[in-house]
Amino acid sequence: QVQLVESGGGLVQPGGSLRLSCAASGFAINSYAMRWYRQVPGKERELVASSSSGLRMNYADSVKGRFIISRVNAKNTVYLQMNSLKPEDTAVYYCNADRSCALGYACYWGQGTQVTVSS
Image (cartoon, rainbow, N blue to C red; front, side, top):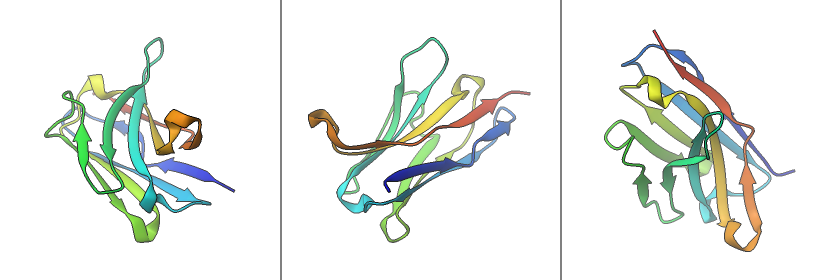
């Protein structure tokens, strides 16, 4: 059974840090681009960070220098280290595995984990 399970969300004060984890099962992430998205109510899902199968990383301008995406293929897990968090980072964060999302297959999503940045 293919599954992505996110964890690590929660409530944190501005300036704090959180590390999100996304554990994959039922497939091997080493041939997938792995991405973190976030979404707030009433807005479109936003791409936050991506890690290609070739280990190239990209970030949204809003998180550059603060967030780090990493992956441990041997553990079939991808991480998002979030530092210097701001209230505007508050969202539900989703993990995505993409080998052929554009073609409508080999495209998986987690259930999401809530991150709230507030004092």
